[in-house]
Length: 463
Image (cartoon, rainbow, N blue to C red; front, side):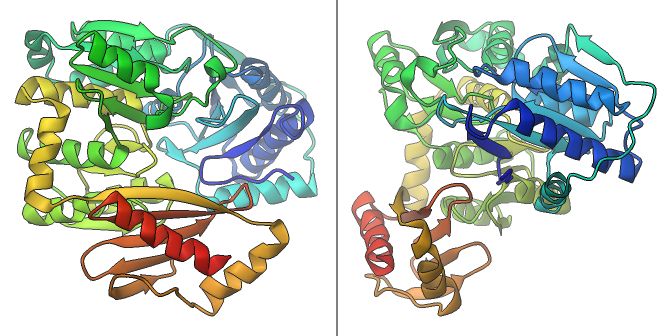
């Protein structure tokens, strides 16, 4: 079955990610466009560097053309934020990115982008799944659509980012950056921005490798050993890594310390609010650090909590005119840019922050820890037999039972999984994976030991 999760449809190449299924998704999109009267504008199609992505983009385009729908397609691999930008800038109805983001190399997938450059909401993907399953086919028009190959699709996107940066501050800082693109499709974009800002830039893993060097293209601490070692041994001021389709970012300090997405969110919100004077609230999802709440409160601002899924973050940002929104998995967006995750702009802003403040990432972070206390997040997955899911779901979500925790519970939220808030601002949350028989558990507290203990309580209770 073709099922869309929060990050699109993802499947193993050759098993479910096949030409037949790719064409089914494309035909489903065409049916919706014809019924809704949105076939009047072209669809922009991008693709990452995975084994089947470029071919899949052509198969997808051919179906659209057969339905009389015009297509704009990339000449080279492109990050998801670029597709989002083009949909927004050209006021298109739809965009498509062929990618499995940070998943292992054997996966590929499809992300649907809707008007204003947003991730397709669940209401749309549910409808698309229904159309695909019913296989209702409209009569195809006699006149096919056209395909335009975009030769310079990056220009507007890069100019938009550069126009928002303090280029003089970066140019005068002499910052040395080591960039690990993890063989992904954001390579050219971030290199261009940083070189234009005249950083001293060196790179690793920029070549196209469908197997991503034998590792997942995810900017997680355990996957960035090479970057961390080189940053310290060669005395770089900063290490940057981005995922396979350019929507998640990881940062390495000159000491080799890895900065998590939670830390990046806190630091960038503080920088935008205090140094650039961008007043307004911040938005995070349920599984993201509560230090953002404390930082916002110190500014006299609000931190809004939304369910997991970036579409909820971008929607709430519009509603409350937030400065920044993000999630602990590594994605964030900033007011006035695109309505989705963008590692290129986020990384560029991080470089600007270091140039303006003259501090290292860890120096900035330690100032926040001194002000708000330590907030350490841990995560773990509980694997279970598929037939055991109803029992676990009934225990947690229906009967609403909880284990005995070593902290006093303040309240419980069942909006998206089960989140337990403790009176000292710690929390633990568990949610079912949308694609695997896993219960994903996150906990944040004053120490790694306590966070792990909260996770163990939840795991033992569910077994």
